[in-house]
Image (cartoon, rainbow over all chains, first blue to last red; front, side):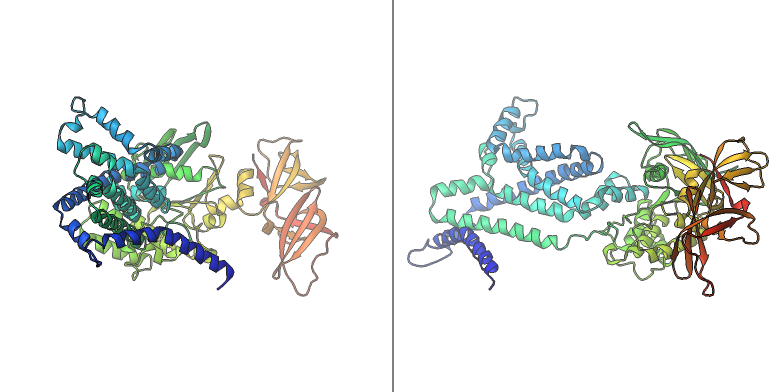
Length: 263
Length: 355
């Protein structure tokens, strides 16, 4: 083995160990629920818990609505900025980065002040309204990832020329976005969607402070009161997140190849 | 033109303070193939984009088939366009790309399929309907782009430098194909190019554009042989420009580098003592006296380039250089640099340039 390669592999192994050893330890601990032998009892308890199923499904539904809201907001915005207002792109990029800088707790306290039952927009006056506010909050948290994924997708196609080609063939804006732009950035949108999914599944702050039965507060609750189940839940959450990442990688292979640049 | 199909009337376009198109006027007949020819930044693409509806004129009108389309959106104009970068939809197959405009128009499915097949045959790619754009060569992609533009039977076809991204060989064959298809369908076409050879070879008429204006509009023969401005003369083909002085405007006598030339025609609008620019195409000049070329100027051979079948000779006349090409004759030695030479031309081939 060449000297350079050895150091590269060593660095890789150290990095991998840094991530994998704690996970293996967590997995090993989760499997020690039954005394004296390894078992999947903790996982069975978790999967059998009706609260796990309910909170997980709640978060999955919230994630789906968050993705839809994110796509509806981000795709037309990123498209329009690339097409008509490239000069304000840095401003939009800055705005989309704000959720990374402003803590979720600040956002949720803002929501509670702004959308209380006495406000003109009383989201918090009903359970459905609070669910809607939760989805809006999640969409805000996912904005940096969704925007970047979509913007990167748009960069791979000649947005302006494709738009003009569709326009001159008689297409209106709805057809241009749904038949030309969206299919060509679909993989990027799906990447953003799976990142959003991963964020929503593990989110705690907003869901907890809005008092919604989401998966994040359930994780926290179990972690505070049980020994082995939290470790099993941590492993399950990692598997879900990694599953999302794998799907993103697989989808990237099916991205339409751009034929819009002259050879 | 009594009944033009496309009429561009006093169109102007400015971006901020910069005027890109200035007072552009043009009438195009039905079925005519017109080329906008000019260097980068002359406004030819902007003018085309205004016809397409992608840019709004700052002033003026665009009329297609008697209807003012100046304020119509691109998707309301029924115009076909082929772009330099092909602009095929990467997610759609060749057949789906061609069918796009027909689907937008709500054409019945069977009719769409028939039209797509016709178009595929027209562009000579009947077997490639199921391919995706990335599986085609540049030339094939541009053919598909042409078929897509023609499928909905547009009133007007716009071609925005469609050949400039292709290699030289494909460019020549495709331009001939485009012209063939255009003639076959009889569709009024505007072709934008900066390549003079392309424009000369396929156009019915050429609009030579300079600095946002149409400097000259004419047939390729007129544009090449009778340029009316210095810009057109310089831009189209290779040109030898000589500076002279009018001796007798009525008799057409001019002095160039101390030597007198009789034009054989009067110089309208000029008088004795005026400066005048004269132009000669290299093919209109020969070395030594030649029958039918009574005009002559004496000079010195500056340099000689042997190019095989052709010898390019540059002759110094006063402070100007005149290039001419002569066929290689194995029986004769090539001209020698530094030797005296007489160049001959027909006075009718001398072009008097305007500004």
